[in-house]
Amino acid sequence: MNAASDGPRPALLFVTDLAYEARGRRYCDEDIFLTSRLREEFDVALCHPRDAAALLDGFDAVVMRNSGPVLHYQEAYDAFRARALELGLPVCNSLDGQGDMAGKQYLVDLSRAGHPVIPTVDLTEDLGLLPRAAEYVVKPKLGADSVGLRFTPDAVLPEGGDGTLLVQPRIDFRYEVSFYFIDQDFQYALYAPDPERRWVLEPYAPGPADLDFAHRFVEWNTLTHGIQRVDACRTAEGELLLVELEDLNPYLSLDRVPEEVREAFVARLKVSLRRLTA
Image 1 (spheres, rainbow, N blue to C red):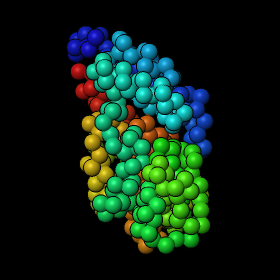
Image 2 (cartoon, one colour):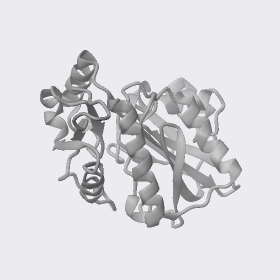
Image 3 (cartoon, rainbow, N blue to C red):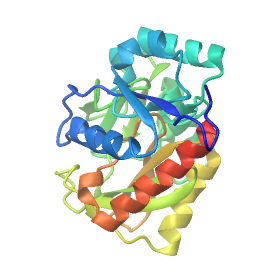
Image 4 (cartoon, rainbow, N blue to C red):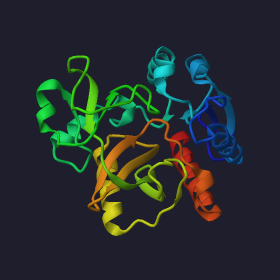
């Protein structure tokens, strides 16, 4: 069903959960906007992530967008991945990322390798590698949207340090900043000037060092194509540290960017999807 340039329009299955409620964000508004613009060049059908595996036949590509944390529908997501791979169906984002798509083991690996990330360990015997802090963060490797996250006064892994949980020092940071990419091409950046209001974002003008930082992790990742968001925090000392590499279904905060930036993003996404369905 792949369309030639003078043939039928490519058909996209757009996977989203329009009813998902996230703190400080309206996922549904973003996906309603994106699908309205993609329909200018593609035939688009929306479906819930629990229904995706059963609906893949007859589409030229799948776009995985604001479908909520996979842990809420893990079995359905695993079935979707298996079916998409079986069909050889292009997926945006491609299913080969090693960031959040594969859990948060990458934070441990990057920390061990000396990359600029928040120091992270997952084993009791490695707790001594963490810097001293007034408080620590413990969270599951397969968590998302702060599900299962808790704070402790000591660097401990309550379940015995069996590798299923992460522990990090709670960083005293000035602000959080996110860098957004399509197919490894930088698009825009946003930051939260108030650390207590993570999703009250404003446009951020990154300098060369900021972009080098963000590109470092995008280039490290194995994602073939799709949208990535590099989340970082600016420490009190001025250093950027990676918080998260979201390469599955990152929320884009398109309502927080100027119209010309939003239009440029949509145009670049269309280019990516045209290549994917060619």
